[in-house]
Length: 552
Image 1 (cartoon, rainbow, N blue to C red):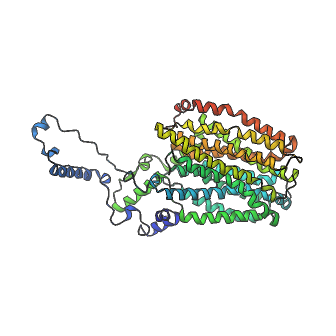
Image 2 (image 1 turned 30 degrees about the vertical axis):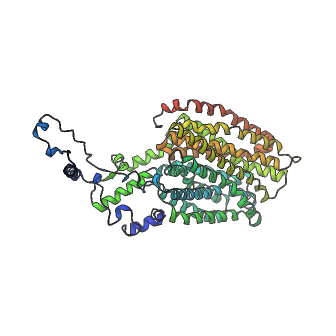
Image 3 (image 1 turned 180 degrees about the vertical axis):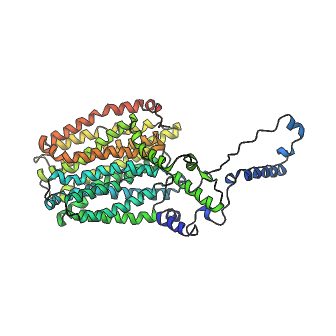
């Protein structure tokens, strides 16, 4: 595990300062030898001839071009010599190269997944933990419900906008994923301080927006980070853990903040967020490595050039982008998420998942209406029903792992291939859960019906949302693997915009047409999306075949 520290922010800094003497990479060690395929062209030619002569001398009946008689040469029997590239490309040393994230030990990969989950949960908790502060914010700053709720909405919208600019940067080989995560998390933690000392609502809302923006990369690029390390068959096993933690963050937030806000006012949930994300930052700067393969190879090429002085050595990404200006690469990377949104497959799934997340964030407005206004729970206790959603999220994750092992992996072992559309089968199964949950919650939320009934209804919503998201979040990167981070960033924007907007009118929706009527309206909209999911499951391959971005 020492190589995890070596590849972390602190480890890389120490390696750079010591000129490779501390925590060295293989090519920085004294016994390292430049592979033959990376030698300059003339040296490779000479080495090839010497190797052939050695083999010929040691093996009877084997001839080299120099040992052939003139008759054979005149008859043109000498085989054509393989072309040698002018500029050798730095790649993996062999198929088992331990610098390749795909070859990392299972322990190391699981550790990095755990760190990614910690980061995601910490930032996601920051959205809903604010809801516990809303009543006291209304009193302290003398503002209405909608204005106070804007602190939640702006945060959610910002962490959808942020990845559109920050996540594509992680796909630029000269930057990579780790610097984006660490730098933005430092800013995120720092922003909690002016949030705590805001003396007016405008400052508070501005800080909440900026915090959401700079906390956003993990929410979109976390999936791409995990994809860097796992074969597509095992990818869902890791993705499901990340997805569960992404859902648990908003569910834990109100529980963490509810009792703190009730006891000490609106600032204490923000203090809790500062402590949580500060701890996460300390862990990650020591133990979070780079996972982008192109970035790892680019840094290897730089180290080899520094060691050997052979400036013509380049990584594949450097060769590919040699003719481009950095500004051109940057613009292309920033535009890519928007370009990919024009893909019918991506656009439909973005909208469908966004609707699910919008309804998910409406629970944070529905629960106070139901459990405080109808069942007369206190501020802290009103968040406890979120435990029902937390339990079903974990149970659904376990069921999905079993489904992937006994259905998906078994199919791959039997057929040798996995069609991306097969990943949507689980989404078809899960689609009815959402409307069923909404109908149960909406029409059992009455004073003459025990509170456990709407709690069970709300808990049933998570299996539907989770499995639809899981199917789509694996399906899209499988279909467009080269643009995984950009696709997930675009998906995050859709989720965030709708998820952030819905809470602003949530209370008005439930108070004007009732909890039952509001939930029924949302259930009807969800049902309207079902036919598109079936169509995509059946004809998705034909649609992707016409795409210039898909390469599965």
